[in-house]
Image 1 (tube, rainbow, N blue to C red):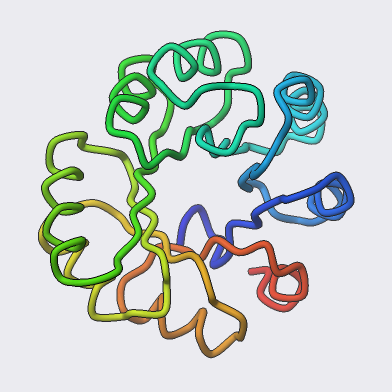
Image 2 (image 1 turned 60 degrees about the vertical axis):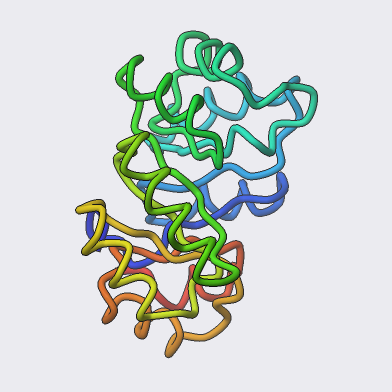
Length: 184
């Protein structure tokens, strides 16, 4: 588990953010924020002592490059940044912010390319999508020596447990019913 959490709640909208703020989870993920919301929602999270990852690629109105990553790290101060871009991961690490490399595994070539990318960028964590492939979770962890989060298409408690049993540290999900059922 990641910091005693099986689930990293992924917040897609303000209603989910309010649900997250009322929850007992300490760590969560912001998805799909508009640039104008970032500072305010991070201040609200910090007031409630919540530590938030921010998916840098999904911030509307902000390009997902190393300059945006530098801005986010310096001006917003997230617990961590999530990105598919190696340059964003490298900048987050340089600024002392946790970095999650998000990868999509479509086939064996994608797996090989992503393992090389992880080895180059050296993120703190890797998020594997879809998270329903236990053998890939295990292989990514073994070949990169990085902790893995599983995300995408996970809808049931059994699927969460399968990902954790395969070696995932946690599951990222926007499914609020899973948040409620799996709080540890």
